[in-house]
Length: 360
Ligand code: SAM
Ligand code: SF4
Image (cartoon, rainbow, N blue to C red):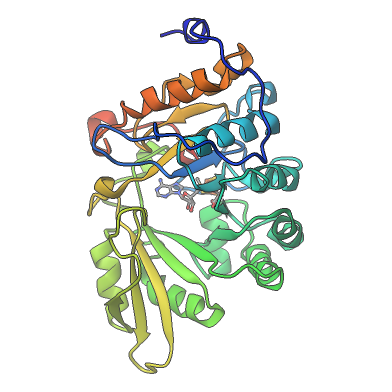
């Protein structure tokens, strides 16, 4: 169905509505054909980034879309509100690098004011966090995920191409000072690059009372980089960890709604009073699609039902062509019926879009 024909159906409210009004009780929540309910929305607010991570994008970056094609703050807020009407309760702001979007603090404020958003978080590379942590906290951001793949400054610069470990560490300090708790670290584990750092990363997280999530490298984006030379499975990570940390199942391990990470408590063998919460995201070796509870909204307003498949529905076009709230909600519900039952990371259907464009 074209956007024009979607908008031509029964007239309903055309406006953005009152963002602070409580979400209507709506029996038609976002449920897919596998009966998975979607309660978690990841919103990419920009396709731009100040880093060039080797596993995420080519050295000269990826081509970015003209700014006019990005969703405006009002468009993002309206779509978040409509997702909330359909049962979404957790919203994560991501990118590209979300902190390079101008006035990001204002957007956070706008989204935080939407009644029904119970959990508002952000995934960031942390480079600009030093100055922004407190304003983000004041604007209503509740939690942070900071990506940090290595604790070696030189290796960090090599992996991120233009990043600075010192800046990210300063960002983490600022986040703690601003009152962020339960901050998560994201570490993509790459063979031969940082696979030998998994024990040190856990010690670092324990020291700072952070939650560390190890992420399996997925074949997204920089196509020629993914392969047996870089891919490192989670069971290898756990084996290496086990030399220093005893692992005990923990928390929302495997529970529906808890998302793809499997959480464990690490207990330091040499000092059992030292513990750390560790998450493992094994997209390739331990398919987690059964537990998937999320959808993604790209920075240009495309609804992406699965990380591994390109989305087809442009919610931005619907807004810009004057569709009403109910028409957009109906389109969201319809799109969810096309959510695949499991990811398509096999060679034939590998996505060439970079993770920076998708939002991770
Ligand atoms: N720029 C922000 C950052 O790096 O945290 C947010 C966007 S980034 C695309 C979100 C997450 O995706 C990061 O933790 C990053 O390490 C991870 N990521 C990027 N490319 C990946 C890949 N091919 N496989 C697995 N994780 C990836
Ligand atoms: Fe690195 Fe995130 Fe930027 Fe990708 S989007 S290059 S993972 S900082």
